[in-house]
Structure formats: structure tokens, C-alpha cells
Image 1: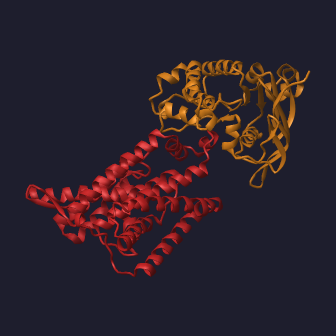
Image 2 (image 1 turned 120 degrees about the vertical axis):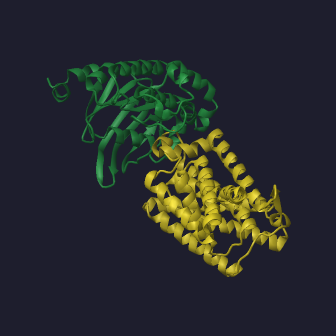
Image 3 (image 1 turned 90 degrees about the vertical axis):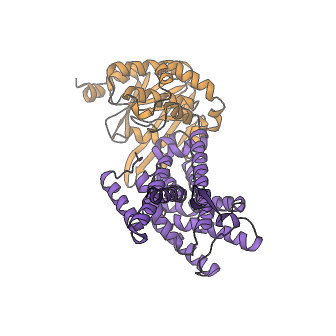
Length: 286
Length: 239
């Protein structure tokens, strides 16, 4: 019996790392710009497809391909904020939301045209491998997801707390007016915040692609998971995002093991609803 | 007597959307002085400070700082030139530590190189901030938060400090302490333009003052002159 629960809990923790990784960019963009980036899931999947293209045409290992994927997504993020979101913010609070939705549709359909609706995966030898804890066997790719999530979290935390730019991003999220008065160019800071969120989306996309098959429409599914993570953990809190991911991951795998696979997501969203009802700012939100 | 003018505001009109907040406002700040801007709520005092800081831009008129036209510059470039606004009340970054708030004050390129040196100065003026440096800013008292925003302003290594209603909601004893610190700051060569509602107090502390009423400058002069002015007596002292 103990083994029956142990295995899904380990799976849930590892899966939770991937969920946190996916949610991080969503949380950051909301925390800093108060924008619900409806395109975030599709940006993650865009990262998966960039890695897929590099793997298919150049034979590049997905993790190595991050060397290209990350700067590419960083650049796309900066440009999207500067040329689309920044201008949309000047129009109204709703305009960026609609722009994000538009971007999501463009990415989805471009991927449909380029890659067909077939499901793809970033399959490598090591992503197919497994590791053992006692008699139990777990996919190695899940372990990689978790390690990647922890590394990205720590890197992001160090960046935000130690560098001028990181502090400026935090400052702009807490008091935009005061940030202006400190000489912080908030347009530039927003550009970097969006770009960094995209950087994390690139990493999430690559590790997601090694773990699950994806299609051009997978973005929506992961956007919804990211929402769940962020609602549980609290928007804008890095630590909360990790905890939110873990809770969601464990809830999903435990429900699957104990109540059957059909109930997995039902339980997850019941938890999300309960937390929304009793603590709307999330467990670690302000 | 020729005076060195550090800031010159020439006949500006400023709007909030369709509402005109400032009408043909002109003002001169002399280098090294302590100048007050007096007026009731909604007289346009904060609007004027925000326009000097570049958060708002006038539809008419110009603003010159040390002879340079800054009318159309964005806020971060104005900070870089040496004008820092100390926002009223809770203009803090509440979830960050006191030290991080201060460090952010030195965000501009020019100020970064003097970070350590200015931090020492700030702790000299407000020793309590050094004691509290690891604390989250929202846990500070109102007076301490006000000291923090002034300290943070000093970190920008300014030539001109704009202070918005620093005494708002604070106890008289704290206000005394703040004014004492301001005088010390001014003695280090920083020009101060401050906004207040408390007229009696302001005319004791400032050398000169401008009075704003519904977006227009109605009076200006030395503090001594203004104390004697009938209009001021009637409007503000109820005599």
C-alpha cells in the first residue's frame, strides 16, 4: 500500500517541477505588468517546436539547442513587449489581453502549417531512459524537468535580488510611479521582464517536449495548468510558483492513482477552486 | 543681485486628460535655496512636481534645468540630469528591504558610481535606516518610511530635490526631525523645492514660497513677505 502512494507522490513532485517551470513566465509577466498573457502556453510550445526544428534539421540535442532557443525567445519576447504590448498598454487595459490572444492564434496556426497537426516529441535516448528508487521505476525525463525547474528558479531569484535590472523589475512591479521617479525606464524594464519570461518559456518548452508529446494546440492545455499553478502559489512569487506546481503535480498523480485517471484534472481544479475561495491571493501571494 | 537659477518653469499649461490642472504657471528655483510650494488640495502642487519630473508633459510652455530644455524628456533622463522627486506618503517599494529601496535610488548611471559614498551620507542623516536596513519596508513606521524615501532620493545624487507633502499624516515631533534633516541636506549644496499644506510651518522653514490656487500661481515672495500678506493671512491663517 505504501508503495502505491509513494510512486505517484514522487511522480507528482517531479511533474510539479515541470508545471512550475511552465508557469514561471506567466507569473512573472503578471507580477510585473499585470498582464494575463494568454499566449504563454503557446510561447512554451513555440520553444518546443524551435527545439524540434533544430533536432530534426541539424540533429541537435534538445538541451544543447537551448543555446539557440533561449536567445531567440528572449529576442522575440523583447520585441513583442516593445512593439505590440507596450503600444497596446497605451490604448487600454484590455488591449494587451486581446493582442495576447491574437499572438496565441498566430503561433498555433503557424505551427499547424509548418508542422501539421501531428503530435511530435523531443525524443532522445536519455529522455526515454528511466531511473530506480528501490523497486520502483520513474522516467528520467521527469527528473530532468525537476532539476531544470529548480535551477531556473534559483537563477531567477538570484537575478531579481542581486542585479540592478532585477531589482528594477521587482520595484516596477511594486510601485510603478516610484520606479519612474528613481530613474527606472519602465518601458525597458518591461521589455526585459517579458524577454526573461520568454527565456523561461523556452526552457519549459524544451523540457516539456522531452516529457510529453505536443501538437500545435497543446499550448492551451498547458496555459490552463499554468493558471492553476499560479492561482495556488500566488502570482509573482517565485517560491509560491514552485509550491503551486508541486501541489498541482502531486494532486494530479495521487488522484490518478487512487481514483482513476479520469478524475486527475477534476481533483486538480477542485483544489484550485477551493484555494481561490479561501485564499484568493494564493498561498504565497501578497 | 544676480541669482543663479537652477530651474525655470515658463508659462506651462498641464492637463489631466481633458481637465486643465495648471494654467500658465511660471516659477524659478535659485540654486541652493529652500523653496516652498503652498496650496490647498487639488491646487496643482503635485501636478507641478510631476511635470518637472517628466511624468506629465505640458501642452504649453517650457521647463529649463541648468539652462537645458527638459520639457519633453522622460522621467529617467530627468533623474539622470540631477532632479529627484521624493513622492508623498507611501512612495516605497513595500515588499523590498530598506537597503534595496535605497540601492534603487542609485539606479541612474551617474549615481551608481557614488553608491557607497551616498549610502554613508544617508545613514549619517538617518541612522535609523542603517539599523533597519534588512527589514521589509512595509514594516517601518510612517516617519521611518518618509525618512527612507528622502534617503532614497539622496541616493540619486541629486542637485535638486522635489519633496511632495512629506509631513502628511506624521506627528509634529517626526516632522521636526525631518525638517532638521532637510536643512542638513540643503547645507550639503542640494537645492530643495518642497510642497506643503501646512502654511504656518512652511513659512517658517522656507526662504521663499509660491502660492498655487486652482492651478494658478497667485502669489510669490520671501517667506517674511508672505507672512505679512493680507491674502495669505485671510486664506490660510484665518486672521
